[in-house]
Image (tube, rainbow, N blue to C red):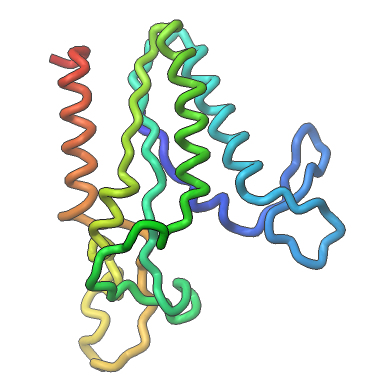
Length: 184
């Protein structure tokens, strides 16, 4: 099992627990407590990892760390592009999400070992920083500039496409599973 995906926690949200509003993230103008995305992301990872580590299935689980989107000069809906040609420098990327993943992984890994589950960290964050060209960019649609070389098209700098970064992630998964000895 590969557990991944924290980008949706960055969106505006109101957090409910047991039919009670706990607070929100990025909900300006509402009379709610701002908890930030960290609250929900930590809680979601805790719930999923606790379920996996307490299960009787002897699961082999990877927690894939967050990967960067490479939007510059805006987001997907406001003209952002991913035309970056140089690598990111240390400190250019927000590390809050990755820190949550590392913390929750450490907590769960100890429990997993006791219960027969195997937990591995698939740390793709820094590897993915090296490939700002690994996104579909404007080519999420077939021949986006066929009719007009200067057309304004929506750019995808969040999702990853093959070949490239995802191939490396797959290689890491396979090598880790083989090295673990469970799948020889």
